[in-house]
Length: 410
Image 1: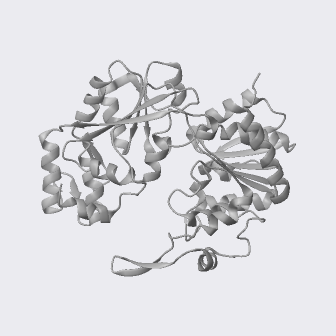
Image 2: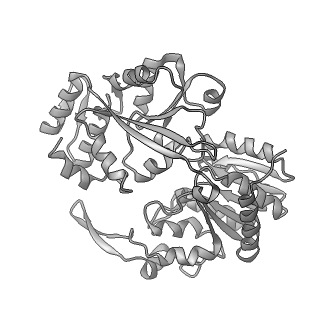
Image 3: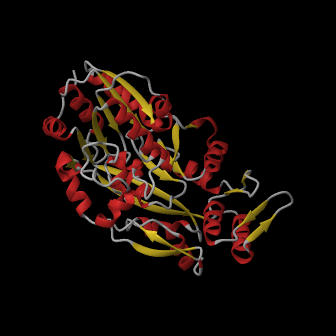
């Protein structure tokens, strides 16, 4: 029979009080501290009959497992954000928004934020938002996470732009010869206004003592990889018999070099080619005796892994759990909402430009009982990856401005 940890009971009790007062709560609980079960316990305490749980597609199986483990009295509809328009017409007592920070685009609301707003308006229900990183890049990301909730603390601001006048230090920045407003400098007063509705909880408070050890391993790529990268840097174009690689802007050059240095490339036609599997072969040999979880950046990199690992690799969590196969996940889709605790190590085939991806994905092996986790970064010798790594470990996204500076050293 499932039993909550003491801290989860305390959070559930406090969250119920907040919901009674404000009709919503934000569970800002770090990864692996039990957000899902805590939110389901909250729904049970509030006497809900029908609950909608909105999450990422890959997280759905684990949420259903938690629901079955708890075996509550309410019915649960678990759906991913991309399918939220297909939700049934039941009367929902609560909507749980997992990884709520993905609703935080600004200055205009994203499609999913608009859809969530309409659902809340229709059902007039409790709302439970959850994220280990509520505002990973800017405090400004909070506005559209909660703007659909009638009792949110910014309800008197009918648009983000009106909200920005009081809560953001608006600056101008130049993009392609045009000056535009930069709304990223949100004041900490945004979090202060959200504090009465927010419950923050860390892994340390939960008793986690896991130490993450990282190691960078460099791989010498095939000569044709370096030839393609050097040609693109020099001429901004690589022309083949049928396809073209174009790097005519700094952003495109950064993207193409990022692909090339790991052995794949997407052409101007939309086709892609795998021309160097050195990284995949290195991973297979180096981790021969381990069960590993691999993160990759570009879709073609998964195809490269399949070429080398054949049937010893999968991309579904349930297959990874019940077999001796390794798992490979795209960084952005695998960085949240899943546990990779069965892995002996996390291995990065490539690295994402996002600091959020770095901090969230590297924590996928963490459990309360695990004392150490090993993370390996597989970088091409002389490539772009190490420069990206230097930025994201400082909690900064790797941008075109970083790339322009680093290009001189490549």
